[in-house]
Length: 153
Image 1 (tube, rainbow, N blue to C red):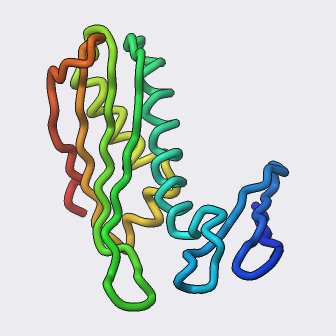
Image 2 (cartoon, rainbow, N blue to C red; image 1 turned 90 degrees about the vertical axis):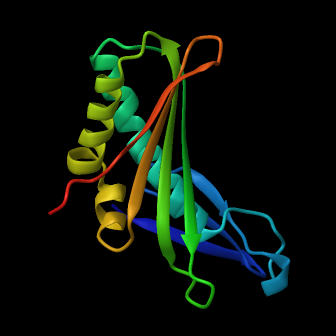
């Protein structure tokens, strides 16, 4: 895999990778940016959400779960001083559908965390990751919630 950023002006860059898509990168005005693109660490959180989200929805579909809505939210705490690394990550899986099986969801989360998601495998080596899940009925009413913990090594 190859990736490249090209400087445009100030603190504005355009990012590309093997797929050919372009993504804007920018910085906060307090550091000379124009607030015109994603921050690099935002993309790390987005890549984690996307990686595990794609795994979980794929597994749930294979398990014939009737998912009508699905969001993955990532919250990352950061160190106060430079280099502002992530110190703790919480992943929330919000699944809406008809008769979603909690065991199927927790198994999908487990498989993503332990087998399929390279973003989670890499980040999990350097920062603790907590996984929470929320199951909603088709009308948006919360039915079940819980936490899935990585097994001790």
